[in-house]
Length: 382
Image 1: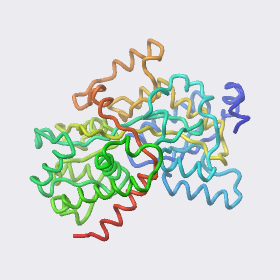
Image 2: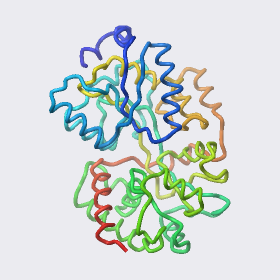
Image 3: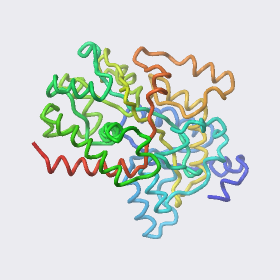
Image 4: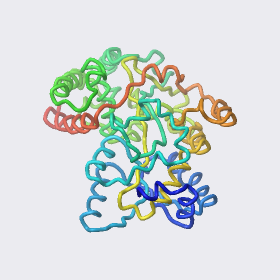
């Protein structure tokens, strides 16, 4: 990989032409799948002769499969491109399963917003060229302005609202639910700065106790009295649309826009940022150490960094995924196109997103909190 990354870009393009790139990624959202399958794939084929095949694969499953390939002596695996961040990136680096460095050699990297700590650090980790950013998101609650015209704006107000509206709030068991709990963790620790600088078990234990005290005091007022929790965000959206709960949530502040346009959420749905701060992070692309087609993967990653591809996925009718580019440094024609994106009243103002954005901390906090929450729920069931 090191020799490939040092080659002239024309040489990388030539090696990639006529090849197939298998991309392991999350396939749980129709909007994302449509963007990849119907927009990205045909353009990679037409312009670079690359056949892109996106298949399911994420998190621990992805890490385990790459470990199995290594232990089986497979020097050429199945996947050439991976959608990763946070704990998955940490685990892959720890196991020496990622190729690199290569990301800084992409022509499109010149426009990456490297000054942003949200983009330049992956859960406090320096990507060091082993992954390339391709999208940025920020957590938001989702509420119905017709049902809840005066929503709570802080965790304290949310707790009061939950108590006065029993059965109308919950969180999911997946990544988004853990992100919500991590926001409570930040607040109970005294702010994100108290948890920065790597994982600290003492600080974590103190903050975790605050999280569980907060949850235990509210659990009787949760949906189904906290006896069960939705498995994922899609289930949360269904409960919200069916008026069984009054809040859903998302790791993408713009998901409310796409889901309303798709008819999944009510037209009066809105995104909500809590003044305590909401977690923002970036998703990245990695190349396995045993990738059969590293050249094709680099070309695909570079295309996904292009202003054209970044603009397309940010469109509300497509995915509404945030860009990792510093739009101010783009050529004038692209600055105009980004500025002209279809504005939607459900979109949150950029200044509010910047004001309340809080960075991710060490992925160990996420891993521990997810595991400890599951154990706590089992041990302290209603």
